[in-house]
Image 1 (cartoon, rainbow, N blue to C red):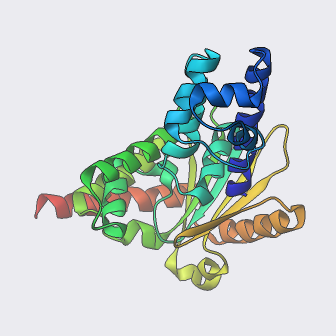
Image 2: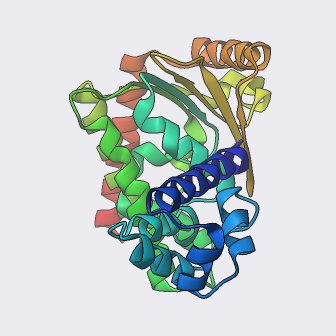
Image 3: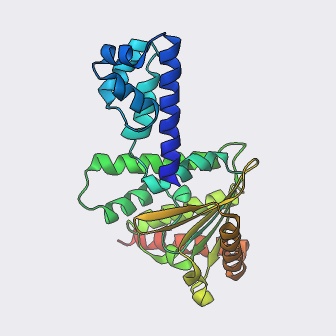
Length: 277
C-alpha cells in the first residue's frame, strides 16, 4: 500500500510536469533540450515510468519558472527518508484520522514516546548508525505526536501490554519520564490508555502491533507491523477481523482507572530506582 501510494504521488508529479510544460508551449523535446536530457526522458517522467535526479528537477523548475515546486516535491518523495516505505502511508493518514486505536505488545506506541525513549529504541535497533541519523528519526517521531495536541485531534485509544511498562528502555530515568508522560496525557484526557496485564495470558499472542484508523470520508483501515515490515489493510472483511481482535484485547485489559494507577505506580518505581543509581 505504501509503495502504491508513493507511485500515485509520482504520477501526480508527472501530471504537473506535463501541465506546466504545455502551459509554457514546450514540446517534450524542447524542454529536454533546456534541462540537458532527451525528450524521451521527459515523457517517461510525465508517465511516472522513470524518476528524475535532483539536479534535473531543479533545472525543470528553472526552465518552467515554477518557483521550486518540482524540487520540493522531489525531496518529499525521494530525499525524505525519515520513515520506512511500509510506514510512510500510515504517516500520511494519521492527520486525517478521526479515531486511532493501537495495541502495543512490546514497545510504547510511537505517538506516545518521549524523545529520550525514542532515542533509546533507535540506538538499540540501529547500533552502528550516526548520531545525526538517530536525531533525524527521533525528531520525525516526535513531530508525529503533534496530532494529539490540537483542538481537532483524533480520539486516541491505546492498549499497551504490561511488559512495556516493565521493560527497561534507556534506564530508570528514561522510563520514569516516559510513563509519566503517558499518565499526564491520560489525566489531561487527550488519550485513553489501558494496560493488558501479564495475567491475561494468551491475548497478547493474538496479534502483533495493531493500529486501527477511522476517517470522516473514507473506510476504516488497519495496520499491522512486525520487525522490518508492516502492512496497511483496507479490505473491509480483514479490517473487521482486526477490529474484533482489538475488541477482545481491550476487553481483557484493565479498566482505564486501574491502568492509569498501574502506569503511575511503575513510573514511581523507576523514579526511586533512578535516585539510588
